[in-house]
Length: 94
Figure 1 (cartoon, rainbow, N blue to C red):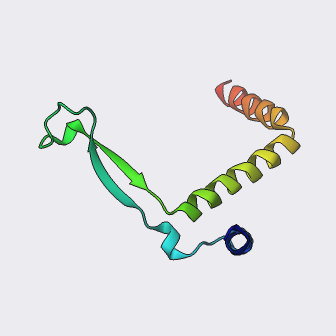
Figure 2 (tube, one colour):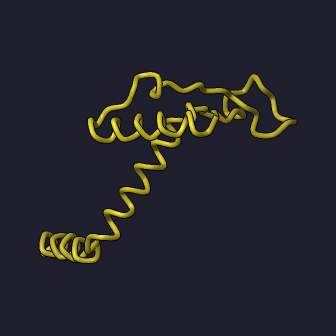
Figure 3 (cartoon, rainbow, N blue to C red):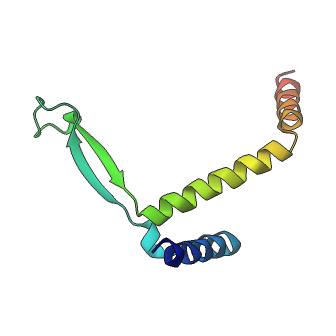
């Protein structure tokens, strides 16, 4: 079973990243209200916490993008970008 699903998931994720778009089915989520604590009143909206259930493949794609972004930032000199930004802000204040 695993050997059938992984190639499809890899193809879908790679195509999504290459084209900068994902299938519309991955953009839909189910939002369910849950009580924050069991003893609270369910009729009060402030006592509810909204929980979003995303499709599994969209979570995989999200993790893939996060990992690739982290690798990109690790390879760049983020400290240099930070210094340039801070020096720009300081010059604006003067």
